[in-house]
Amino acid sequence: MTSRPPRSAGVMLLVLSSLATGCATSHQASDKAFIREPGDRMYRPPADVSESAKGLWEYAVLSENAYHGEWKRQRPAPPEQEAQVLQLPEATPEAYASRCVPERVGPIPLPGWTMWEHFPSPSLIREAIRVGLFVEVWEKRSSPPVVAIVFRGTEFNSLKDWISNLRWFLRFVPWYEDQYTVVSGRVGREFVDRLAARRPERTGDGAKAVRIVAAGHSLGGGLAQHVAYSMPLTSSAGAPVPRVSSVYAFDPSPVTGWSSVASELRRANAAGLWIDRVFEHGEILAYVRLLMSYTVPPSAANPSVKEIRYNFVQSVNPFSSHSMRLLACALVDASGHARLPDVIERFRGKR
Image (tube, rainbow, N blue to C red; front, side, top):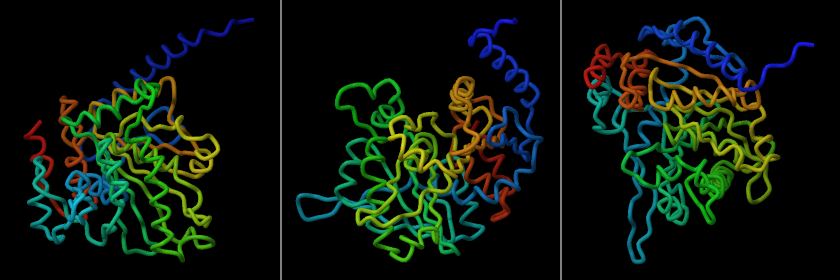
């Protein structure tokens, strides 16, 4: 009988095979997307970026605009804080052209979407500030309505963000708390209760009449997946609520907090869940996710994890390629929503 190769040998063969595949796909034109469908080991033949951009650009803009939100301080004493509604510019060609530059000069237009007022609550904001979390909820006027929970990603100078990024190593420290623990402990509960209060007709038997999604960039992409896994199944009043149906994670952190969620809850939430992991070729976290995929391949179902790789600027700088604004503006252009003929050159000049 032929002996079975040791696991380490199998992993090494998979690594070598993947490296060979990577060489074959290392050249990627800026107008093509490489897509790895759930369960696949290799990318499909390249597709025009416009095909995927149409379904992604709005969530990319939401994820970029999360970097522009802030908590508004209230008076009287003791000072409280509440979410400040982000004012978006009118969706004109001039507005897109002026905002789609490498520097964060202001939020990008997003017609049809409105930010929820008074979310999170002041008490949740206090918890969020303590761990460095920032979250918004936006709603799109459509049929059915789309409600998006959007998380801000890593800000390089934020120690609290890095504590969350390092939770694999720190979560065993006694009394450890980070953004993931606040998301699963408070954000999901407050969201479903607010959804039930705002749209009682959308809960109970009508729970599927609204589409719930989550989105974010970098650390925010990991948090978006975590809120989908940990969302309560009912409101505090016991009414069934819709689950997150899709996650749009851009240049996402490999940290999702999957194992920190009770198995019964995460299985229920993962059933039918679709996750798009969208990234620029060569961005820094792509290499971390690649190494992880050798031991924990992306899930084929429940959740279904799809990878979409772009190569808009064809840069060798893994840090500058990790730009949410680049992805958002390039996808706006590729989708045909707004024509930005020189947008790639603008960002390429900053590489």
